[in-house]
Every structure is written in structure tokens, then in C-alpha cells.
Length: 163
Image (cartoon, helix red, strand yellow):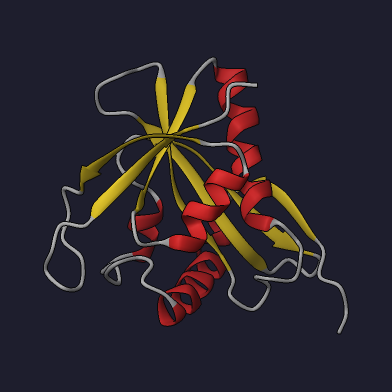
């Protein structure tokens, strides 16, 4: 099998179809997102969005996505969100999830912002990624949204590494 190569770049409007395709594949193989959004493009652009990136393949295909939005209460903090990677390229040693996270960290440093994220406590692969990348666990809190089972899941809150 040919080695896939990817480039991390800022997301553009023409990336939405590819992002939606990958999101649909992720949704079909995992619990993310917890419910399929009525409008996937709107879901990719949460209120207060500041920036978004994609992992683009050598043929222009979208392989992953991540975004950052404003923290609701603290202007010195930005929240990482909407991180997903195409299931067809996961586990190939590309490290796309980590590379997308690092793009947000570089951006936050330029903006003089701290980064945080939340993740469903039971999302073990995501939790493992964040901890492997040095993100610091801060606390556990209940989500303000409802999952497929009608419950408010518990969320692990992390802060980006400072160095």
C-alpha cells in the first residue's frame, strides 16, 4: 500500500464537502459526534470560531479537521474542538491527530492564548492522544448537551502543554 502524505493547512470554504465526507465516515465508525448534525457545515463552525485547519492529502482530499473557538468566559483561553481523522488513514503512523493539535498550539502561541479542550470521558483513543501529546488533565465535568442515549456525558477537560 502506498504511503499517504498529508499537509496541515488552514481550512477553506471549498474544504466543507471533504470535511463532511470524513465526518460521516467517523460517525459511522465511532460515537463522534454523539449525534449527526442537521447542518454539518454549521457544526464545523461553532459560535465564536477563531480558526480551523485540515489535513489535506497529496491529491487534495481531506484526511482530518480541527478548529478553535473562543472560551465563553475567559478571553485568554481558546477551546480546541471538532478534531477528527479519516478512519481509513488512522493507525498508519501518520500522526494526523497530533499534527492537527500542534497546529492549534502554534496558532495559540502567536495569539497569546491558552488552549483547552473537552473530551467525552469514555473516548479512550482521544484521551490517549491528548495525554500522549502532553495535555494536562484539569477536571471532570458534566456536558451541557445530550448524547445518543439521552444522557449528559462526563467530560474530561485538558489544557495544552505550556512548553
